[in-house]
Image (tube, rainbow, N blue to C red; front, top):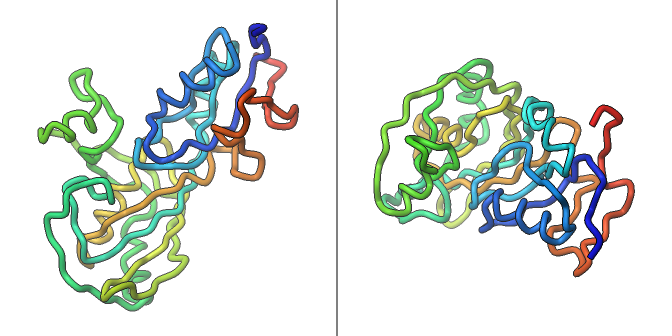
Length: 232
């Protein structure tokens, strides 16, 4: 297979279960690219937009990472796991029903500049090790809170599911925000959440022209889906 020589950014849909590193390795191998990286980690349990940097594009990771992130996430109130998502062990369960107005009333507390503690089940490194690997081994690591920016936070839908309220929310946030922690902080005022997460965009990159990871054996790239920059 001929080496892939183009430089630029590829908008790929990361499926649940793969690490961002796994996706980069898959794309690099499938395209036979010289270099590959990504523009912002998604946890293994999350899915959605992952911008892959190809060849000369790897020099411009900060440009992609600085873009606002857009997420859609669901909180199932009344279920609590040790990781804050459906991948973890259930540790508490209570029926919980809330009106949409009750949920909307707490959202302003979590917009603007807020302090946030990264979750254990996240890709951030502490002492050189990914937190989710420590969490998988049953370890808890001290994580100092850090400031993040929530540009917007909106309730899309709220309905009852098996005696519990499922709340669907959209958020636009700055780099370094952990939506799982955001969901847990919101629900700590109401009740515990169980969150699922879809990244809907990174800066200018959205699902409108996204490439499925297993789209074709040859991983052929339509020209409109390789974002090139004359400066690369």
